[in-house]
Length: 149
Image 1 (cartoon, one colour):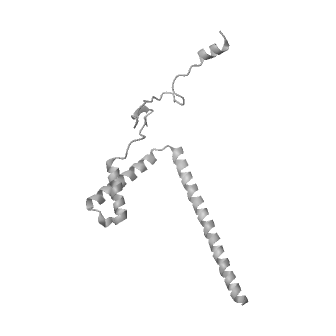
Image 2: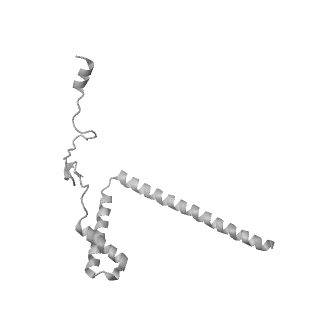
């Protein structure tokens, strides 16, 4: 037995490249089946990609576009109520999902948000000061030309 045969017998690949231990995948076409496992009182799920928008969400967006294009006066009371309910539900779910994040994810999100605000503020201040300086020098040149004449 040579060395290659021994190594070949010892090293055998089982599974899919990049596969994690203990995670099972089902080969499906289209939307994946949701797999739920309970680990230490936390529920983890997988799947969910590729699902189309629900008819309620589509209807709310159509109502919103109609209101934006023609004004809110063009909507019926029921349409306004449906649109408001949908937007409130989406905002509440988004807020709850943020609360479910771990401390590190919240910290990074807050840090990136603050950094983005600071960068935007610095950029806006730089542009504003440049524009003010440019317009003031033009005014001073005009006033200097008038005074010299």
